[in-house]
Amino acid sequence: MVYTPLRNQVHTMRALVAAACVLMLLPGPVSAQRGRAPAARELPPLSMTCVHHPDVLEDRPGTCPFCKMALVPVRLDSSWMCPVHTTVIEADRGSCRLCRRQLVPVTVNLTWSCRGEGVDHLEPGVCGDGSPRIGQRTLRPHGNHNPRHGGQFFMAPDNWHHIEGAYPAARTFRLYLYDDFGRPLAAAALKDVEARVVTKETFEPATRKTTELSAFPLKVARNREYLEARVDQMALPAEMTAKVRFGRGADEHRFDFTFEALTKEPAAPTSLPQPVRTSPAAPSTATPPPSAAPARTSEAGPVSPVIPGSMGEILEQLRLRDSEVRSLVERGNFAAVWVPAFQAKDLAIALEPHLEHLAPAKREAGQPAIGRLVRGAWLLDASGDVGNRQQVEAAYTAFTSAVADVVAAFQ
Image (cartoon, rainbow, N blue to C red):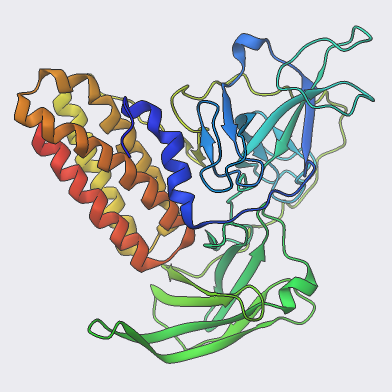
C-alpha cells in the first residue's frame, strides 16, 4: 500500500505495525489533571482512533483496519506524570508536588467538561452557566511506557500486557507485569502467569529449533508484586530471556534482555515538600507536528531532530542515526531504538522536496527508498517495544538497507 505524500502515512503506518495486536480499551479515565483551557488556536490537532484498538491513529475519518468500526476523534498531547502518584499529570517536566520524584513522559487525552454535565468535549468552550469548560489530561492506553523499577520495559505482542525485567543483584532476575495503562497486575492475575528465565540456549538454523541449556522458573515473590528467579552467576553484560504465558494455555511470548550493569530501584526523595495550595495546570499549549503521530519524548526531550539546511548534511545525519540504531541493537537496548529510528524517519521525509531535483533514475529509486525507511522506523519501534531480539534484528536489516538506498539515491 502506497500513500502520497509520505508525510501523510505515519498515522497509517502505526496501524499497520499493530496488525498482529488485539487491544480492548478499558472504560473511563485513569487519571486526570484539571485546569483552564488554552485558546483553540493553541490546541494539538485532532487524530482519529478506534475505540477498541487505540494504537490505530489516522489523520482523517475512516474505519478501523481490524474491527471495521468507525474511527472517532481524539486530541492527544505529551505530558509529564508522577511515577508513583499517577493522578499528578502536568503540562511540563519537573518534580511531583507530592513526593518530589521526577515526572516521566506520558501521552494523554485532552478533553474539556462542565461540572455536573458528565460529557467530555474535544474543544474548550463555555458551560451553560457561563463558566469556562474545565480542561482534563487523561492517561490513555500505551500512554505510559516508563520502567518503574530501573529495569527494561517492553510491550507484549498481545498489545495489552506490559513487562519490566530487572537485574537488581547478582543471580537475581525480577519480572514486573502491568496492564495497558502501566498499572501493576492484580495479585490474582499475577498467579495465572507462567514464566521462566533462560540464561543459556542454542539455536539450530537448519531446524529453527531452540534448545534451552539453562532455565529457571519465575515464581511470585512472597508478599511482593513481581515474579523472581535465582539464576546463574553471570558476567556483565548479562543476557537473558524471559518466556512468558499471560495465563494458563495462552501463547508463550519471548522477551530478550541485556543488562550492562545491575539495575537500581529509583530512590525516593529524603524529604517531602510542605503542602502548598496551587491551581491545576492547564493543558499544554505545545502543538505536535500536524503530519505526525502524537509527539513522543525521551527524558532528554523531544525526539524530533533539527533538520539541517543542506541535502548533504541531512544525509550525514541519516548515516549517524543508522549507526546509533545499530549500536543500540548490538547492545540489546531495544527499548531505545525508536529514538534514532524516528529521527532518521523525519530526516528522510525532509528529503522529499529534493526528489524533483534528481535525475529520473535516481528519483525512481529514492521515493520508494524513503517509504521503506519510514516503514522500517515504525517496525523498529514496534519490535523494540516487544523486546524480541530476532524481530528487532530483522527490522534493523530492512531499515539499514533502506537508509543505504536513500543515501545512494541522493548522493
